[in-house]
Image (cartoon, rainbow, N blue to C red; front, side, top):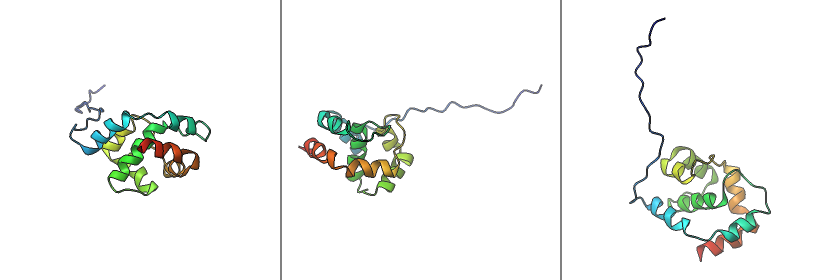
Length: 116
């Protein structure tokens, strides 16, 4: 058998975000919030594979970038390294999941509570 002459390179898969990045700073602050009401409200609805606090962080960070369309947010989650990092190795949400999450009336009070 012939030996392969192909070079092999290691690819680092860990995503590192600068601590000076605005979305990194926002994520750190959002981690400190109490998500009890959000989880309580979320327990009564159809669940996605993504944790509600992660979806909330993704929404807030997308809004910070001026992105409001659920399809554009889905695109950010697929293509932007910061948003991939925000997802914490969870599956990229599709636009329907994002739209259902932010439009659910049961979660509105929990969202308002998180902002206060």
